[in-house]
Amino acid sequence: MAVIGEQLLQPESGWKRYDEANIQAIIKGTFWGKENFNGFYGGSSIWLKSIDSSYKFKFYGNKLRLISDRNTNRPQNNTKLVIDGVEYICNTYGQTNGQILAIDVGNLEDSIHDVVISPVKEGLATIDCIDINSDGYILDLALERNKTINKLEVGEYIPCNYSYYDGFSSFYTGKDINFICVSHTDRQSILICDKVIPDLSFDEINQKGFIYGNELENQSYEHNILKIQSLTGGSNNNGLSEYDKYIVNSDLNGLITPGDKTIWNWDICSITSSISASDNSKIITRGYSSLTNYSTNNTFNNKGPTFGFRPVLIIKHLYVSPSFEINQFGNFDNCFSIANINLDISIKIPKVSVSIINTTNSKTFISTELINVVDNYLNIDYTFNKDDFELNKVNVLKITLTDENEFETSIEINTFPIEDKLLIFNNSITSTIIENKHNKDRMIVCANIKDNCIVLYLNNNNYIEANLEDYVSVNKNTKLKFLLDKNSDLISYGLSFI
Image (tube, rainbow, N blue to C red; front, side, top):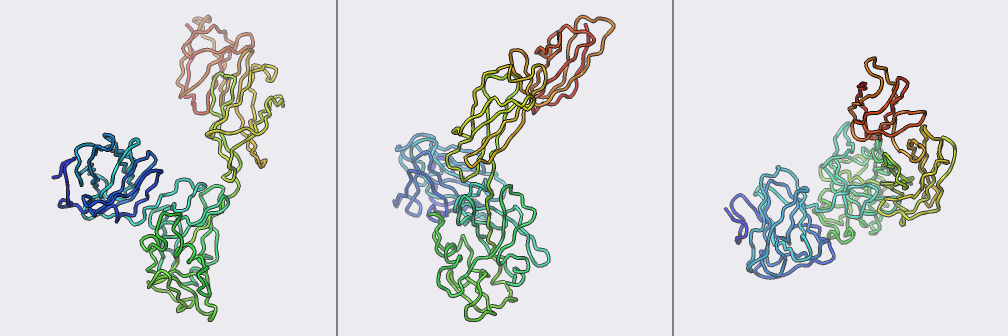
């Protein structure tokens, strides 16, 4: 068995090798390149140098080896390999040699894995070739999976599966097909399926409204409208159709070779929404024998294994009002911390105005102009003034954020002002203490409370803060008040006089 750091010129039994030149990886970063040298497997390797550079691909299998070169022109322990979020560090620093086994990862689940190779710090990390188990394979689609639908980029994809019913299919989150983003603006994204669903006729597709466009039901993406339709194919074969624009000619902003068959799987014809200009009983299909093949041989009800439906997903992004959180609890520290501020994607420089109204007495004590939002966070300074509140009772504050287009969102928080401070909490529970005949002078409070809480007791109509385990002087008319933050849960509490 091969040993880490030793030369491995050929894959061992049970393994197969992919040269880096034959892997459709996504390579990003400000400083990376390719080096040709006969000492490399296949005569070339990829080198990464900047911290932001990376080499990404996917494979199906249960084990992986990275073959690299070794040299003294790089830092030690500078090659980072991440598989499905699990990080491995390997060392390629040392006496010069080529095609060494840099890292060996086994016992993976027999499934699809995401692989990212990058430098740990500024300095060389090299990829010569990749070995995987002999019955595994490198995936053709090496594009980046989208994580946030409102922040799509051209070249990202959304996985999807489909299930047949009544001769057709429905679309839900899954892994059978992929919608690849070919166009994105603030208001609309266009994604095209990487595969064709065969054995469906134009009429069957149109019956569901998916030729010219139909909104999907049970949409789970808030603030978006999702519609499925078909590509235009060009009624006169003039090269101006959506099929030509996106399938034939687009390189997805430099991520793929235009018309790449391993990405678009055009060996099955795509039924388009275009009708033949010379015979309106014939539909236009594209692909099959070649990428640019243009056919008018099929009628509206023809179907078969060599042609079918290539879905196009249109995502219309609705305007999103501001969203935010107030995560404070306990003593107010002269600053309202507004976190997780999110604005509509059309707003390039995030700014909001802030108003805070005490709904208990209708007093507005904060009102600002537009303020810059940095890292989705904003601090609003305020020095507690008891005149802005009604003391010794709950005061509900309404906090409103308004964006540059005058869309606004408000949330309410509970506060409890006393003479010299302001307490912030989510809810409260009040209970009258029952007199114990053995001793009326003092008591101990025992509580089973999740997360944060504040305990107040009433003394001459003033609430005074106390810790859970403190002894406090009370009488039978004393009221105990628990103030809880939004994550707290008062499970139980007990009172006993001592």
